[in-house]
Image (cartoon, rainbow, N blue to C red; front, side, top):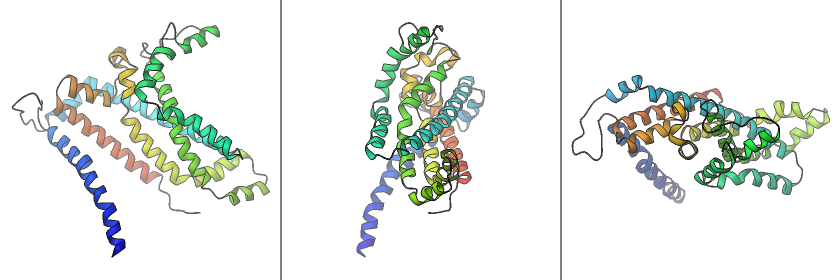
Length: 291
């Protein structure tokens, strides 16, 4: 009986919290998407599926959708590869102090405010004339690049910044997963003179399945929702909307154009995309083993 009281005391606040801050806002957003809703008006007409039909003809929305997929798949792929490689590299050190030092160094950008670091990158790293990147290129005899003004380079700049600010979090998660792999498996492979390359692909990667699944899902979800760097780094969504993504388009439609009904429809589409991709990923990478 005491155990049941403890379980209920833990679960009930969580369920109430999720209902108030997740279920109700999603329900309200869904309802608003069927209205031509502007909070400054007294009367907001019911328009049915008109907002969703409008999405199919909205060129700005389609550009934002394309840019979002380019950004998400580019950063998630590079983030997973880079964090996995760095976590494995760090785990090879025998000293706990050295491992902790490297993890702390890579994790530091994660605790810095994204807005603040975006300002630093936009003022000191990416500027065409005085930025550190172009100073490095010029020192090598190469020409300057307009990192935030050229539509062909803009998304690459945002991806580079996002990797710098976000890769440390996944390094910590992968490191925790690698630390959980029993040492006797590696010791057995040492007896067979297994190379580090084969250890990684035949032992570490397969036994990291559950961690990999969690990291992939949470990285996908968080990258679809990224907003701050697109608002700070990019001026007016970039040339030809080359820096416009769905999160930024939702904000612009809702709070600049005051068309919250249409913004809710876009939000619902983004929610469905994230849900479908998460479901597919869960099915594809399902893990049913244990040490």
